Length: 167
Image 1: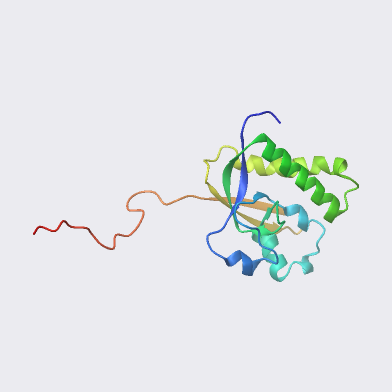
Image 2: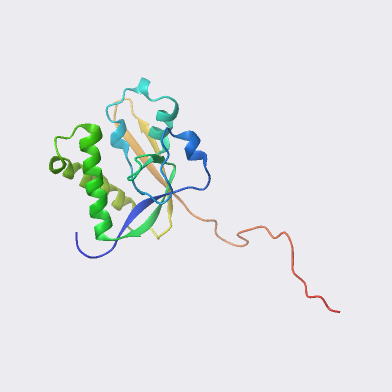
């Protein structure tokens, strides 16, 4: 990777619901990838409960390998990106049986590259969600949505006014 900065995804939490929804919840501010690969070999009947929630709506945090409902577009360095690729390669060896890190690097690069493609062209702090389904053909399909802040005025409800005291 060159020395220029890149945009990647980070987990974000608006509340503590991920702790209840996922078997392992990602911590806030972890680098993240889609993580759909984790479900490639699961049969449809294995997608129940918290596993189903992780499949349907969870991004994969790259530190805890827990899930997050929301991610945000963030600035990253080339070194951050390289570290994420290496961490993913180790994960593929340790959890998914890749023969070694060198053999796992292309898959890790592809996963991080896909996450980078989701972030490219988006403003920093853009929030994304994912919706995953498995088609009748067995193929996992992902739909990513951007959550944008409301536009126009007012962005909040006025509940009081401030007036000067004239004494």
